[in-house]
Image (cartoon, rainbow, N blue to C red; front, side, top):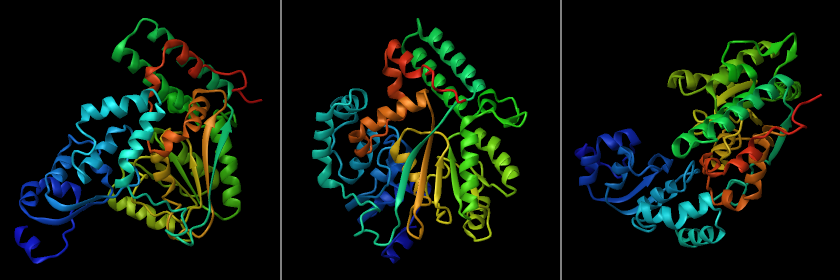
Length: 388
């Protein structure tokens, strides 16, 4: 390795190899170190992050589309690589910025952080014509589905169980109960069989058991009727495995499902096939596995079946289609269920767009900080939730 470095002006490596070769890389004198997809060092305690920090260089650059995926401390870690010590120790950063911003939505803390970091951040967005002159439009919309009576009954049961569990619970036990309920309510909103994990069918007596799936089916009817292609994103592998075969049968086409368990070779084959003119018109992806590094510009429709509630993560997924090479306007639909926790959290995030613009995607942990009355209001099922 030492000889290879001495003989070349540019060295390209992976994060895994960088960690393995840490000692040798740290011994060299580097003019510049550039990290692409720098979210790989978002957790400063990992082996990969420590290896990156150990490389000495005159100049350091970090490139990423998602400086924050779950916690604000991820931004601190990436900036600490590029400009060591700028944001202080992790404990000080949490006290000054993470807690006030993530828990209390403190606008003055947001302003302070922006003032400190903005001189060191060069932000470019694809919608700026000086960056890409010929990229088409991206139209984003929130699409609302009603629950079926079966979904509503399951939803109420999950909320009742959670309220009983948290009545006397405190600390981690209470947080665990709230996050568990949130996950299960998302599953209910997706499909009863997703929540029940009982292997039951998508339809019952020819009728849809999920308002969302009925709505997506109508969307796909229209998209395929126009000879266009669609990407369907879900954060749940088991949900993809439930509905991909259903859509394949319903539309008489192959529906590949790309998730974390798919091999590199199979993944490449799926992408190549989908991108070809005669390839399948629908592709399903798990949000995380399909969130980066894929070019799927054959699709100009993106549907988020369930919400991650993190603009950075959702936009990374959408950008599989909305990227250089896309020639059509891209239609992005984000699904949620009327009168449920999905609709209320979406409304709360929209009203706090300033925080989202700072790329603060705090995941769902902030929900656990709510008191019992606030949780009851957030999770309750409204009367208008069930369709006709």
